[in-house]
Image (tube, rainbow, N blue to C red; front, side):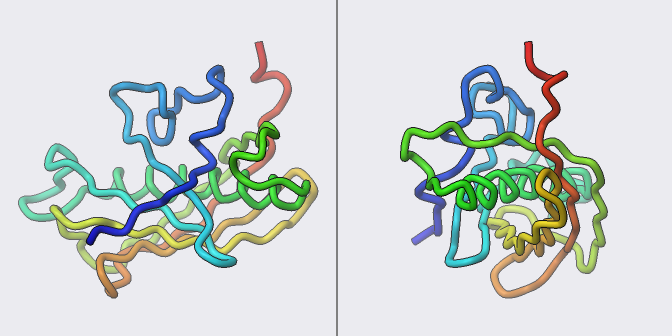
Length: 159
């Protein structure tokens, strides 16, 4: 049985902000990455299509970076939403984050045709800035890790 994220923060982003290529549920061409809680950690599970091949049998690094990026901003949104007294689906609009920095370390080649699990640890470093450390696993093998500094989306992004 394949592991899934039942409640994801991206499922409750307002429509105006649900278009990200990585995690936007309304972007037909996007990845539709979904991030939820797994205890005190965050999780995103994704099975990349074969078009994200780097070399035969392996995923290209840009796909891994995209997964870490969107997992990081989604994790920050989950953490601030919870800090504000809310949980996914309680009717409150979650905060949106953008990436201030992204660092990725590729540790092992990441095989194709298997689900990738992004597991995140979130740390508040400022009321509007959060650090998310993410590890990408294939089964029990750590293939990549990264860090996102995510900031609350500035009002200048709003229409």
